Image (cartoon, rainbow, N blue to C red; front, side, top):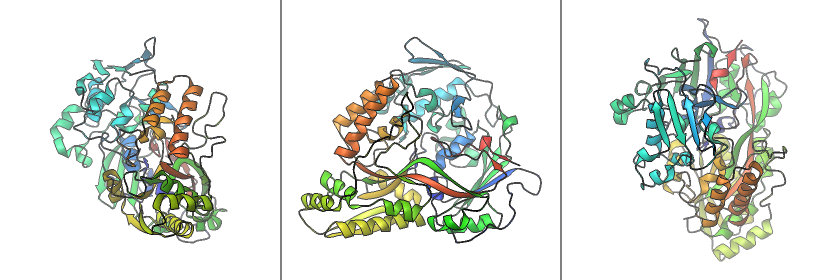
Length: 538
């Protein structure tokens, strides 16, 4: 997910947002239930919904909405494991594990029509159709002919997905893919009712009335830039195991307001900034955790300055990340130079993928030398693009100070942009350097490293390396877990250590307040941030 994804983009910012100082929480110690006895989870977000179209979604806000109102073949359970959802049990596989045959369970759309195999065929073909313009079409590359279709070389009907009958879906892969079942839990793989989408045309998924739902909740209300409401879906097949009646999300641009709302008993969750941790750490509402999102700086490789690898390496070596992690965040975030988060990918023997990885380190003398080689000592002004949240402003100002202090002749101008504007500028290549966050969409290194291949729709840094593309292809084709991860690590070394295509800084932690009577409100390791299906209020 442009999380970020997660470009991820990003509900991730909420957890890092600045909040007002206070020493104790006020209001009721419990929360969530309304006066009429309904169980209502009350949340905030810094960004509004960008789209509800599974093929067009690119960010965490959109994918969180889709994950809780739609359902694919698989869904993540409360422990983050992929389990059958629209699929009724495990699929049948052919001998070489490239053909999956799924039997669909009896399930309905929110208008009472049955969910059929054709709903998946239509949605998946639509996602890879170049006319749709999906930036996430790449995530379907594992399906037979997906890349050729998206490139315009084959018709969408050649995609490796077929409705054998209304309840039987046959999926053919390009090659065996150990992450495929996990992948089907992701938003781009959710079904779409073809007749409904065709009837709505260009209005499809643009508001609450132009979308059908087959997930635990329906998107029942939306006040643009104010908030939205999800309501329990009476037609959902597993409705009896959904405890919440509603999820009420307010859009709060000034994250300093969120703690006030929490103290007033008006919301059930509030992210804390660094200066708030000490004040609240003894509260029963206080919690911390390490997330799977990576904060990083991206360089536009088509920019005159950052087309030079020495310029990119100079920036990476000019900045001491400890100031960001220990002072600005102070929420359990940890330093990283890898784009793969720790505790996310494990080798067969349990060894963490990131163990021992250090692709670059702060060295101001080397940074100055590299900058001189890249620029010839010329005075330059560079622009740093960032989100318009308070924590993004603080991180950007810290970066500005580090770069200007350690690279002679450099002036950094910060361009803070609203969420949608920032994503649009990155997508169009209208930036030099940008602060971003990325969270994984499924549990495999490809979800993070694949976005930098030359033809990937998410590759807004305009990086292109034939060697990197080859290594990613080789890793993707490898079915031995250890060999697969080794090959991905080789690709990542090229991406970051050799080419400094990006500059990972930290793996995001989170310090937050949550009502003690809220159960199973757990952040997912990958995909959407939350699965409201499992949340309960006691």
